[in-house]
Each structure stands twice: as C-alpha cells, then as structure tokens.
Length: 367
Image 1 (tube, rainbow, N blue to C red):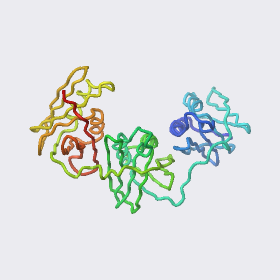
Image 2: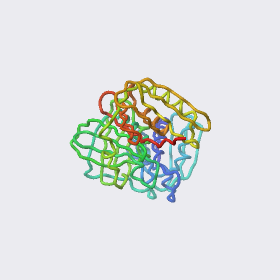
Image 3: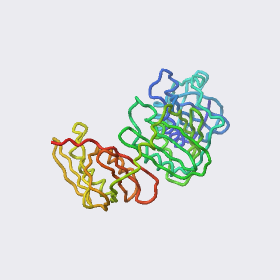
C-alpha cells in the first residue's frame, strides 16, 4: 500500500473510528484500525465485535492495499505529525512507513486477513430522520439506562417504532425515561441498542437539520451519520413492559420553573455523598416545595415556589436520580404529577408530550 493524504482528514477519521477499537483483545488485530486503499480513497474501520465505526477519506493512492495498524500508536503518531501532507507506505510483510515533513516512523502492522468481517444487513428495515432529533432523543433517555450487567437488555435503550411514532425508552429499576417523536415511516420496529453504542453515536451527531439513515436487521443495526457508519449488535432479552410502570392516575400536579428546582436540588446535594445516601425529602404544600435533608455532614432546607393543584404530599427521592431527570428535561418549565408517597414521580413537559420521566421514591426513615 502506498498513499498520500491530508493529515487533518486522517486525524479526524482515526480519532472517530478508534472508538470502535477493542482496548484489549485475544485477537491483536481487534486492537488496531483496518485500512484499505483503493481508487482515490482510504477506508478506515474500528471494530470490537460489538461496536464498529467506519469512514472513508480522500487519498492519492499510488499502490492499492490493506493492513491493520495498532490504533493507540497510530493515532498518537498522526496527531503529532508536523506537516499537513502524510504518506503511508507498507510492504508485503506489513512493515509500515509513515512520513510527514522531516518526520518518519516505521511501525509493524498486521495482515487484514486477521481482521473479522464487518456486519452486513440484508433486507433490513430502514428509517431516516434528522440528526438533531435523534441526538436530543438519545440525550434525554440514555442517562436512565441501567449499569447492571446482570440484566444486559436494560443496559441499552429500547427503540420502538409504531404508528409513525418513534419512542426511545430506558429503565434501570429506579427510574424511567421515554422520549417520543413523529417520524415519516410506516415501519413497525422493536429493538434495543447498547448504551455504549449510543454514547459513541452522540459524539458523531450534530445539531443541524442533516439526515441520518438507520438500517435494522435481526441481530445488528447500522447508522449512517455524515461520512461515518456505526455498526452495532442489538441486545437480546425481554425489555421491561414499561407501559405498565407508568401511573395512569395522579392526585397532585405541580408546575415549576426547571432551573429553580435544579438549583435547589443541586444545593441540597452538597450534604449528600456516595457514603451518606440519605434521601432528599420533598414536601409539596401550599404552592411550594420544601426540600430538606440531614446527614452527618450537615443539614439543608430549601423552598421553591410552584403552581400546585391537588393534595399535599411528602416524598423522599434519591437526589442524583432527581437531578438527572430534571437536567435532561431541556425545557424551561416542567409539570410534576404525584400519586402518593409510594408511587413514582412523573415529570412531563409543560406543553406537548415529547418526554416522560419517572423517578421512584425512596423510603423516609422516621427518627
């Protein structure tokens, strides 16, 4: 292989595809980046058998070929090269020379024959939507995905497409996040994407009205985002029947300015840490929320003015879970629905129905 390409284009491509590279693997090639040079382009891929990211950049190809270079070393080299033009030359033994200006590195590569085949999807269901929309949907649900690998399916986010509405749902046993958007599609889909995949997808999505293309098969999905393709296996298992977990009734509704409540809860969290997991007590009464907490570090009391209808309530919450939900509402005002001290708090937008968050209460210990 013998090519010449832009250093910046190579740096950007390597930085992104290496997110799919395995950090440690019994197969050394999986710790590398696959490179294929042909015609006037260079194809790059990182793949750890669960997540893969690929892209293609322009290059002057003097001799076609392919090889695998260790991702960590290769990325450090290209990032620190002195000139804008880079040449990469490899021989039949995969010894590779990387030149830029007065710098020259020689490193050992691997045969591309050692690299696993990337997933393909035949006859999969397809979906097109705006990048900014999916970015918002992932951001507003991923925070609630479980970290407990004992239930792998709940470490991902459910994608559910029905009646031209796409829903993303995440649960972890103590909270639920659901985000909905109308999508122009007649497909009916139900699949779970690993949280790790969606974390990497977030880094590739932008806030512009640019399209992305999603193809789903029986075991994998592929997202085309800009000049990148993200491959991912899907999670097996039965996802929580989340609709049954959403309370249908409520006894109190509270309308509150999101930033004011976030700031108050954030201040209250100062006397709570991982070792002192005392609940944040919330008393909903007389158009106010009274927040209080007592730990070995100290005590705190806060009052937030709200608009309230219904009966007064006193409920304890995990402070971090409540903060996570509030911070991901992405709106100026939210509506809180309550139905007693043992039912989950429901967080809704003040207008519309784009999201629904549930935060389960925790028991208040009486002294």
